[in-house]
Image (cartoon, rainbow, N blue to C red; front, side, top):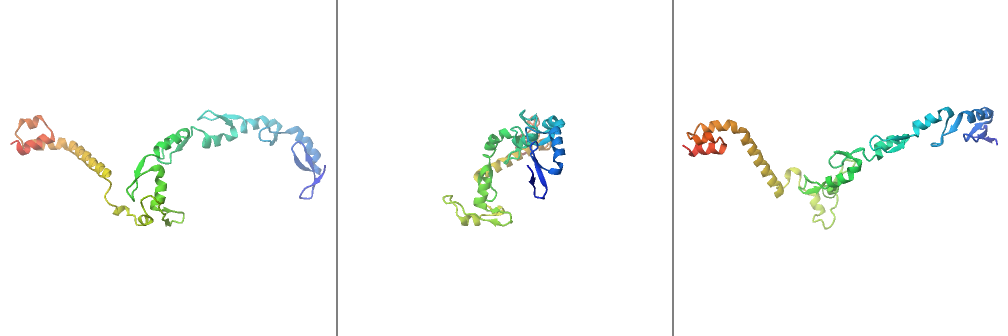
Length: 232
């Protein structure tokens, strides 16, 4: 049945390709369409009959993911490899270490439980709670670059005035006891390492001021120093 399209031309509907064809071209189109075109059973597009199998293999034939071995339509393979494959590598938001997507939840659960010291306030905060901590207690810079202060929830033991008058990094009070202990331990280990490294140089010098044969038999810094002062 003839119809008139928006351009004012009369058209006939082709039942094979389901398109409106100008009446002047309908007979030629009808003969060509049925003989040379067929509808793809996957995407419903009209493709040349002689290239139907090639079209199917190129766009719709199952492809195997090289990472997980899953079979997906070839046209969806890229999306699968980049967004859905359980063995694709993704970065942990806490440590930026690449892990398999299937293992990310377990990794993030452990990694996010690690604590780091907040520089402005000296408190140890879990990594998964760091953003909320910064927003609640130290403000957050929005897209305008303006720092906004947030009210601290009731019952937290702090007030809004505490937040607005928090000490700057360079004016913070003394570090926590645990931090001081770690610092002292670090200095002690460093000092021992330096003494061990200088031992070959100090031992002959210190032995030179002692006439005791024991100092030569026991070339240690402590023996050398002891006999240098009290061994004569």
